[in-house]
Image (cartoon, rainbow, N blue to C red; front, side, top):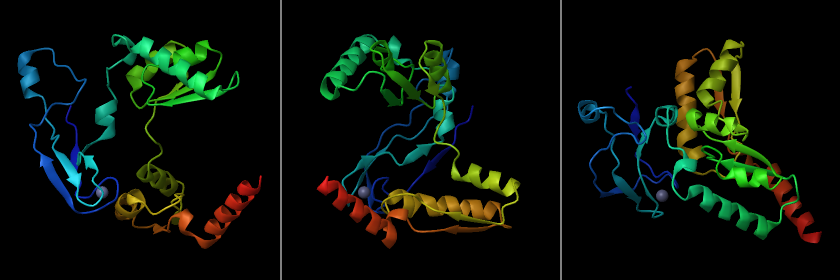
Length: 232
Ligand SMILES: [Zn+2]
């Protein structure tokens, strides 16, 4: 399998272009992909794991981004098999239940739920549970153990949604980012994704509006909501 990796030049958190290499490391193979013999192991594709820091916000991060499906589609780490983890999760679940005292039957959602190990004690205590994990192999294990799990990345992605709309005959698409603020994702990632979709579907007029939270009417509605909440 050949995985794809791309290098970004801006901070993942604030979008600053002033990101600096602070720790150079040797490239490593993908985790949880085990070779059966030494020669295969040595020939494994390796990926950069250099560490960068943003000079503006201080966020320490990797800037080499590996394609998500290459990372997760055949992931083999099962958290329930790691020594001490089920006991640890049972303690976390007990602490959460003590702290928040959720009513019987309330829904507990675990994002990045692996094999459902954290949700099992919640289910045993009478809660409804839902796991979400992109690794299909571990999600399957959770489902077999009675923990309902959605095994997907955030879908559909923009490219997929535009392709579906194009196939359905759409001529114009307005992309409305339902974010409260214009963070790095809206400022940096979204225009790049929209440009790529435009290049792929030249017959469609594709427009990108500003973040919903920066619209005056939405801000007025939020202010009104805050005032009413304060009076309650
Ligand atoms: Zn930053």
